[in-house]
Length: 344
Image 1: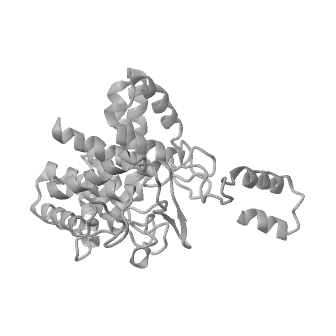
Image 2 (image 1 turned 60 degrees about the vertical axis):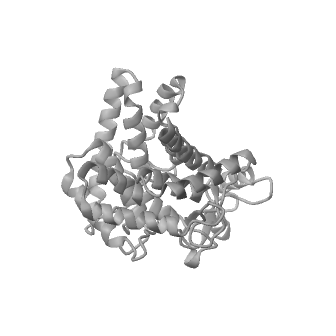
Image 3 (image 1 turned 90 degrees about the horizontal axis):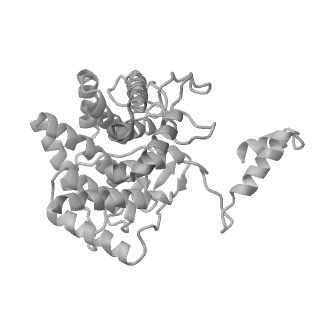
């Protein structure tokens, strides 16, 4: 819309580009008269859903979805960010930009599904993951963390290291390239420094409108704890165990009376944030009582038909908020599925 208005103001209202843009805007309007910020998060929501389903993805869906995901990997230098090949963007449309959140999401999915495809596709997966890891390693900032799009000075939003993105990258590297010990260690040292005194971590691209300063420490802490849980299992580091415990204690301390979680203390419970917190506590094997209360809240939402009610936790700069219909479903599926493993 901004580009369209600018072109019209510059006297190009008859341009075919403007007419196509207006058609796109007309086609994108929602039934309630509003417009979404993004119309397509296909790659991001696909990897979230697949990582939630894990081995429960039906067999007949594996080959098509793996092929589709492999085709989304960038094979050439990106014209906007000048990013090298190897990354994935959030969308399969041409306006996407490879980033350090969607790329580890794709890596984890492909690694998980590799054993379920033929040998030729397995080789494609190996090549794709290798290329993606090279790209991610080249993106690591000097402070040890990972930015969204561009390696930089750590000052601008797009090149500033982020705890949630760094944790996502570390999970992918620990899964598929554990030999990158130095880079992984630097990433965890960045996360160590970013942990707040209360045990929480803050994300970059997610927030909560009802929390102080629009922050969402539940999202950030939950995503970082998943990386600490993996690292603790592999190294049994005392320091990481302590930080993981502090993060879990933070989540437990701000659980709402009804058993759910909002984005921060005393914020109304949502499916997304409750599922994220439960998933993290399960991964860290922490606070069974809090886990059970959170599960009870989620199960109640399922029984009441509210499990798909999305909350606007997605946050872009300039106070642009969005909700995504698949967030509550994918996050809840992951939490409930992992909880089921505890009793089977």
